[in-house]
Amino acid sequence: MADGENSLTPTKMSELPEGVQDHGTFQRRFWIAQRVAWVGFTLILLACLLGLLGRNGVFSAETVASSGGEIEIPSISRWNAPDEMRVTLVSGTADQTVYVDARFLEAFSVEGIDPPQKDILRKDGRIGYVFGSDPSATSKIVFRLQTQQPGLRSFLVGIGDDVGEHSTVILP
Image (cartoon, rainbow, N blue to C red; front, side, top):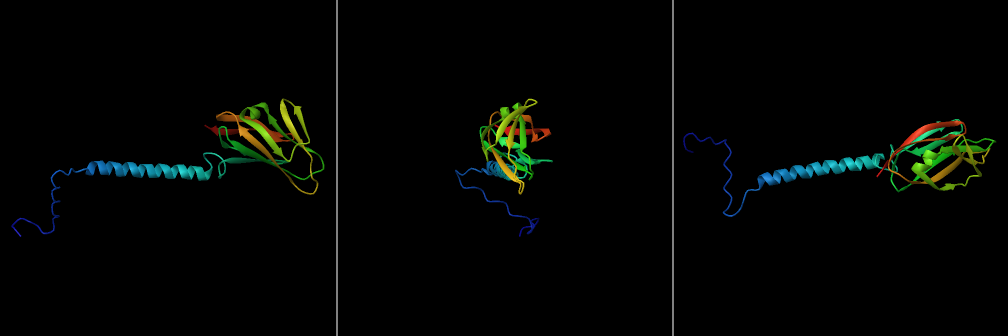
């Protein structure tokens, strides 16, 4: 070793062969862009799994409890996509009515109801779907919906006299 050279210093990288260019800067930028895309894709997948982008998941539906039962309303839905509103009516001797208002029908069209309602009525500007009750068990009803317009939609929904304001985000 020559004087002044330290054996612990790293050796200088050899020169690239003639005609080969160093693309290290581009490769580092490409690596960073790739990692950012991976993080973005992971966040999108996580949002999908949690129900933040549509059907299914923890945040995709809101359950509203009332004295006559409970209603599971979509809190996040997709525009022009099918969705469901599930109603569970407690057992009783009298018929029960599920009410929605005109704003609900602007956000969703009712494509079908399983099992079908006994009757439909209008009361205080609301539309009521009347269902027969089963005195021995709870009744489960599924409203098959089709979303109509994107945006934040507020509407009234409830069972019997227990009707309240709720909202749904319909994503484009």
